[in-house]
Amino acid sequence: MKHYNLLILLFILPILTCHSQIELSKKGQEYYYSNPIITGMNPDPSICRVGEDYYLVTSTFGFYPGLPIYHSRDLVHWKLIGYGIDRPSQLNLNESEGDKINLYAATIRYNKGVFYIINTNTGRHNEDRNFVITATNPAGPWSEAHYIEGAPRIDPSLFFDDDGKVYYTGNDTAANPVFEKQRNIWMQEIDINTWKLVGNKVIVVDPGNYYKGLVLSGKENLLLDFFEGPHVYKKDGKYYLLISHGGTFWEHAVSIWNSDSIFGPYVLDNKNPIATNRDFSHNSYIHHTGHADMVETQNGEWWMVLLGTRPYGGDFTNLGRETCLVPVDWSGEWPVVNPLGPVGRIMPIHHRPNLPNHPWEEKDIRDNFDTKKLGLDWNFMQTPKEVWWHLDAPSGKLKINLRPEIIDKNVNPSFIGQRQAHKNFTAITKMEFIPKVENETAGMVITRDVSNQFQLVKTLKNGAEYLQLIRKEVVNDKIELIIAETQVSSKALYLKMEALEQLFTFSFSEDGKNWKILAKDQDGRLLSNALGIGRFTGTFIGMYATSKGKESSNSALFDWFEYSGF
Ligand code: 6LW
Image (cartoon, rainbow, N blue to C red; front, side):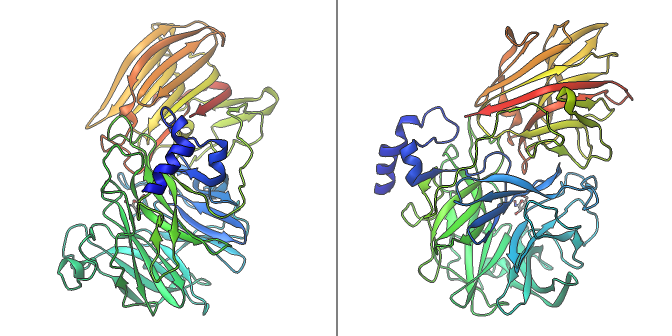
């Protein structure tokens, strides 16, 4: 703790206050990095190393393209290079059962020139919903999905043993559960030529045994709910099993077991959990930490990536579960997380990996849509069945067709958005749109998953063009309220959303110079996971057009979109 206080004094105190991400001084960045390392909805991170390059994948649920692939050379600076799922032929995100939303936690591994991602499409009704995709270039293209029969539930992982055998590890409900939220960890050999599970399925960790007190050592602090996110590592001839537990919210934690043989028996490290912030207060800077993966650098250091959230304005996490990084000392039998202390805790800043600093070029905050393809940051909800957007290069505008779909569950609406990645941000777009009939609407939307949202949209009302701010809340029912509206006349409208943490301001301009506030101090907690909405996902902001259930030949043109945050 002494070391940590010194650090705060020297390197960050000056600029801690208003920034959503702890901003380190230039000097500070030479020695330290701040968490999260990838901001906005990026949960369940999995990582692998190839030479001096690191690749990381996160969960994306019903958003398309799915499974973003990030690249780094220093574990601190990450660049989005592509997606594992970016073709409708690979899998169909529109298959969604109830609120089960598609792509849960994935694992990325590299072996003999091939990258492997194993993942679960929870939207599929039947059993075989775990699949593998492969690629030789991590930026893609990735293969079609190879479904694995007989692989239940979620959080699949692959382990390539040095005898050439490959093992599948995942979680599953217990045949005879001892307690409600019991999830066992199972393992089975897998043939990566046929994608068939071979040999016996072995329960390698059964939390029911701890519940029944059959196994004592290290049980004290072991929250037994929801054993998930398993990964196998081999070190000094021993097999290690890293497992997350406690559920992905305030009790989230990570523990580790080891064994001399792949199928166990696995023994629990008596210092578990090895990583958790569950005893931190709810308004601590980073919380909910868990669902981890580990990597050894080319210099023999070990590091852990895991999800974490940044609650603000109370127990509210608008940004969803983000990706964090924490140092690991694995010089002994067991890995020790954040060895310099506080041990096992994930802090806002840590000292940097012993790797050459490798920042990527700054991203331009404005997208002028003068490219042939949409930028990688842009996502859709579910898999588009038809191409209803057009990048009109000559005019450098993005045209979005009005379609009957509205933003809702299991729908692919005319919404193109990107992750809200900062607590404080400004987003502006220039839109040209003339509504012809009352149900035609277009503009800007910020939405938590596909439910709670603010819509800053232009529409027709009593024959006149209006700009409206609509607050949509999905509790038991959908409550849509027009918070404010004003008549507008110009074809081109500049729309702006600003957030200072949970305080939102919505403005517009008809010339891009003179701005008028339509509504301010709007409560942003609508977009947090507080109301149990979008617990797994996060907040997206973007461009939207709809004709609300009716056919339309109309479209909206977006000249540019700007997003900047701090
Ligand atoms: C992920 C699992 C989890 O697959 O949430 O709460 C799922 N825990 O580990 C989606 O993030």
